[in-house]
Amino acid sequence: MIVILKQNAPQQKVDELYELIRSKGLDIHTVEGEQDTVLGLIGDTFQLDIERLNQLDIVSAVRRISEPYKLVNRKFHNENSVITVENTAVGDGKFAVIAGPCSVETEEQIIEVAKRVKAAGATMLRGGAFKPRTSPYAFRGLKAEGIELLLEAKKATGLPIVTELTSLSHIDLFNDVDVIQVGARNMQNFDMLLELGKCDKTILLKRGLSSTIQEWLMSAEYIAAGGNNNIILCERGIRTYETATRNTLDISCVPVLKEKTHLPVIVDPSHATGYSSLVRPMSKAAVVAGADGLMIEVHNHPEKALCDGAQSVTPDQFDEIMADVKRLCQSEGR
Image (tube, rainbow, N blue to C red; front, side, top):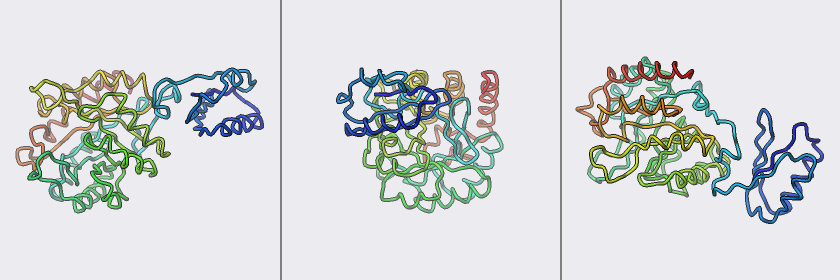
């Protein structure tokens, strides 16, 4: 349930309303917008008398929210959220591009790629230090050393770094990481989500391989319920019967999410398609669909990559993608 207060409501009456709501065992999440102050009521709201609330002279409207997710619901927070990571903003017209290799391999590799993607216009650097792999025999990342190399690349370029947390046992290594990525396999790792809700870092939440949009938003709700509203959603393709691509890019989820949530939405065309030749057209499709950003895998030598070389574009190809993206964003006033 949300309660919308009238402008310039007397503070004493607002405090009395808060006391009434809390006396029913409910929590209150307050959002102060440019036009309205919205109270999001968390808990069993059926104990409240909606008619009584509507009759209060400081209340503009009372609305029940049928969806199980409340804090990330656009009905509760109509204005688009803008997530700021150092000097980079994502959401509400602020377009961000996260680029870099699937896995951090060497200091030379990550710094070379970081410099190239920054020159092309990327606003954040991605790189896997811990890699969840289907096969136990595949390369699983440099782990702590990988994070150190990412931090060296940040020193060299100034780009904020994005890397995936695969287990809460590693979280102390992420103190200097700017954006913690929750991968598709951990999207419903609720213990991890609850713990990340207690931190103040931006969380990049990827969609699960077979997850519905509601399940995805409920995972975001876990993070928000812990007090952390710095959440970016990332569509990375879902599993369908199609075998021509690695996954199926659900481009329609972008406008659907824009209706349902205030959180920024970005698209990862690399994991979604699995082929470098498809990254460019799908990047353009994501911009036109209304995405707030892209996450693209870039490797200086894809043929030698230790992980996902087939879906990684070269720095030269990334230059071409960024030229398209900038042109499309400019035409749409972003």
